[in-house]
Length: 39
Image 1 (cartoon, helix red, strand yellow):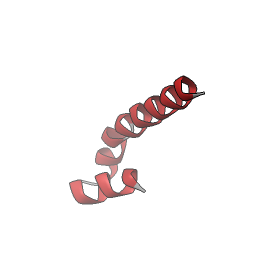
Image 2 (image 1 turned 30 degrees about the vertical axis):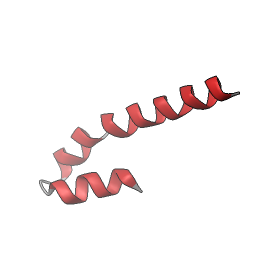
Image 3 (image 1 turned 90 degrees about the horizontal axis):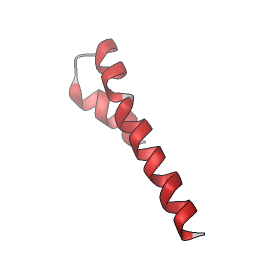
Image 4 (image 1 turned 135 degrees about the horizontal axis):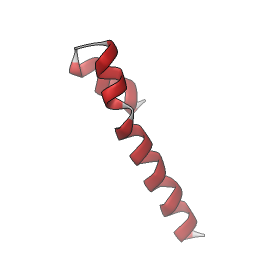
């Protein structure tokens, strides 16, 4: 169960980091880009 949880959380973090360049293409404000991915 713990291994599955770690795998899901790792995939979630990777997809969250991967979407930051797409947000930066829309807005040039880094604060908006990172805060939109945190929540």
